[in-house]
Each structure stands twice: as C-alpha cells, then as structure tokens.
Image (tube, rainbow, N blue to C red; front, side, top):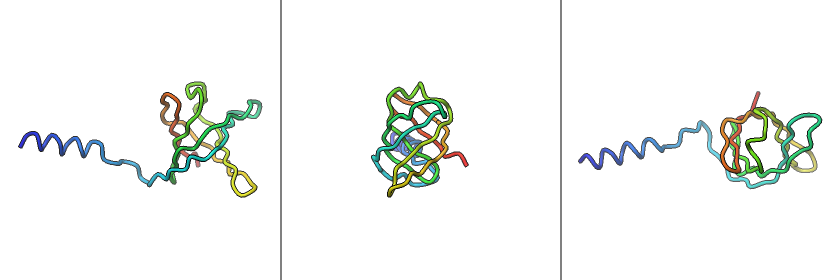
Length: 97
C-alpha cells in the first residue's frame, strides 16, 4: 500500500501545470536582442498562448527580455518575450504584454 501511495504522489508531482496547451511547431524564427545587435536564428520548438520553448545556440548569452520574430505569410509577427528558464540549448519564454 505504501508503494502505491508513493507512486500516486509522484504522478501528481509531474502533472502538467501549464495554464494553456503547448503545440509542437519546430518553425524557424529570429531573436532580436536590441536595435544594434544582429538577429540570431532559432527554432520555436513548441508554443502556447502564454509562451514558447526555443532552441538557440548560447542561451546563457541572451538578455532577460528580447523580441521573437516569426515570418508568417509574407509578413512578420513580433512578440516581446521574457526568459523564464534556460537549459543547454533551449530557453523558455513568456510573452510580455
């Protein structure tokens, strides 16, 4: 019985806590850090209504806030984002409103 309780608690601990569903995208985008810096290429791995997971070289060199640029249908969608976590080659961002 103790083993079952432990498994149930572990399952609840890993339950999805995001407020909105993430969609896999794997689409190419660009990161713009400031007006003078050159844009960096990245891949939007997945995204939701509140943020995205982005694959990028050197995630620890990025500033806390930046612009994410996605080319769609002949135009660009630009979203201001704030980094909420960093990993080996990825960052998690939240949209700034």
